Image (cartoon, rainbow, N blue to C red; front, side, top):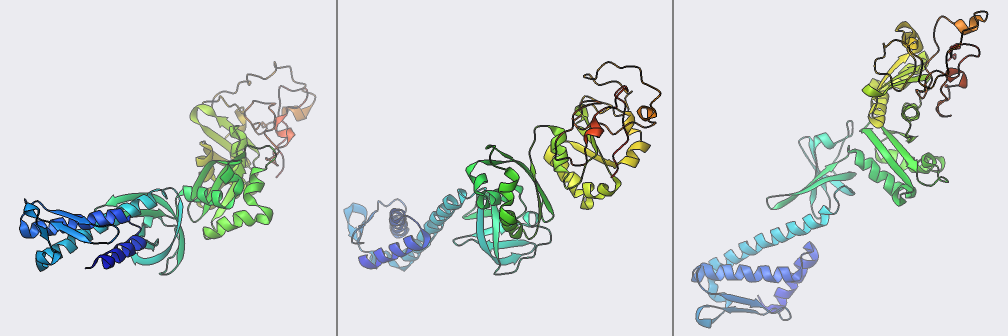
Length: 401
């Protein structure tokens, strides 16, 4: 092979596989030394040099005797070819690993190349990605030639190959989509505090704004829902609930259970449990299909949420227990809240203050007479949390519907 032809070959490999030219020249020199020792012996002192400008190859054998490449013979030439091929594969593996290693925890777009059993092989250009069954979205089908957006879970070396594990169901895929579609999230103005996902069905996202002038929910939804619609379309129609984060557990639970309307919440902090009472017609909405809504709300808030209707709550005597954030045993004997004013003698003349059943526990867990949590709980009126006048923090009638 003449010098100019060798230079063209090195340049072609460099452009096609993105391998450094110097690395290619050094690999070729090493392959020629290996081939020469195959003919002259493993202990032979061989020196090979390739001119980077002209491409001329200089081979110096034992006793400083110059050799021609044709003197090495056919077997040595085949050895040089095999060694150089192995060096090329290793160099290409390092290039692919270094290139895709920076894409870990990022989004990549590829084309479905083939189906390997239940797994999907995705062509990413210079290499292939592996989308296993447990990282796929239930219900999605993949056909050869389809373009798919995936999340890179891991990039690792296996032998002479680089294996890229992809995912379509990872929760962080949704986080990256929010960063891509919503500038406020990418800039850090809107922060995604918590995110839980059941891939293919529903996702709940709790966000917070670091700028009081920016509405976090409005920023995520966009004008007429254009921003969130792009994300939903990318996920194949998966439902996404966006709520506002709150440091107050009762407010966060109310927001997390939306769109269901909550009547009352009782918090038991020691066991990290929340007892939520809703109207009968809101029960199925609060629980969700196959329990997904309450399950995701529990993961999002970190509280074990138990939901029941008002009729069930009365039957189990839930309203006989005061709403208190410090309650340990739901069946404990009723005692006044710490911040409750001293009890006064009730006026028996007023029958409305001696109702046979207690009112729903006040939201926020601040005892009888505690304040309403927030305007987000639309069915939670002031009457639910304020005591009747003239009674011992006595309850009023429950709100209807």
